[in-house]
Structure formats: C-alpha cells, structure tokens
Length: 212
Image (tube, rainbow, N blue to C red; front, top):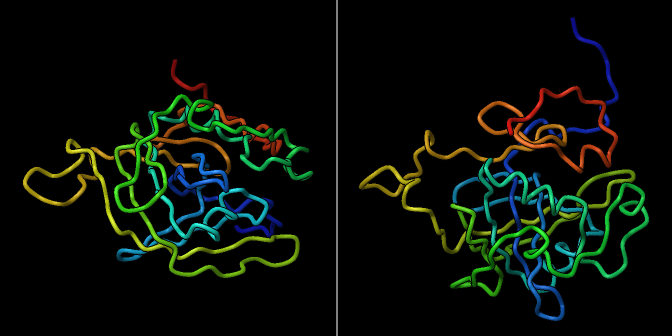
C-alpha cells in the first residue's frame, strides 16, 4: 500500500563529491555535495546559488570532482556545515553553518594541484576528475534557487589499486563510495558516521550505532 507524502528531502542516495574550486582571492575551496550524476565523459552537478562553489564555477569555469570513499566520512562531515562565503546566508546560519576560509585544514585533507585545471585535488580521494564547465542552467522552482552545471571531464586520476589489473576500468568490488542517503552517511550498505548535516536539518532518523 502506498501513501501520499509531501517529502521534505529527496536525497535517495548518491555518491558524495568533494568539489575543488578556486575562491576570488585564489585560495582553495572544497565543498561536499551529493547531487551529481554522470553520462559518458560529462557530469551534472546541482548546487544552491548561495554556495561559494557556485560563484567559483560560474567565474572560473574549472573544478575537480574528488570522489570520497566511505572511509573519509569523518573528513566530509567536518566540512558539512561550513562555507567559504564571507557572509553566511541566513538560511544556512539557521541550521549551524559557519564561515571557514581553509577547508582543507578544517577537514584534515591534503591539497594537490590539478594538472590541466587550476583547481585543487584531494590527495586522500582515490578518484579525482579534473573538469571544465560546459554549461550552467537555472534549476528548481519555488523556494529552490539552484544551478545545474554540465561539466566535462578532461583528466581522470585513479588510485592504481582500484583498477582491474591490466585495464582502464575501476573494479566495483574495490570501490566503496561514500553515499549520502537522506542526509546520512552510508558505505557498504550500512551507516558509517554520524552526520552534522542531518542534525542541522533535524532529520528524525533512528540509526544503528556506527562502528568504532
């Protein structure tokens, strides 16, 4: 039996991406997001218009998509309620966001330079995709003010131990992506870390204890 529900959140489960971009002063920005999908050598990203990353992508037209494994849930969570925007938008401040100028330090991650694009890679992420912005489109309705970015992958960096030996294919048995499902972190089909974002959004979840 189905029931009609006015769902507040539609994040059914997508991989977490750490988007590396450059701020207006040239410093590195790193932002977690989970509204991305791929087709061929392109990716679509959905970003709120109040995000510093949105402004950076519109201005610089370059980014790196760093795909986080489930083992990096803690680092991603440390970024969850931070923004590089000098003035924190009111709707973000209401759920606990704060300004953070050094995202890499806040997360405890290591910055690497891009080879083809002027945007940062994350050394700890086993999959790093250097991208150029091909198009940007207004997205959403009502109170949703967002931009859908089409980005084209111009270079991929993959940890060697993720590859099927002798091929250029990622071994799906070795790749365990961090999944954000209804604002909670999952990996290997189970919860892997408490989520500040879920707390900020007051999600009424009853999760199993995460492993120590």
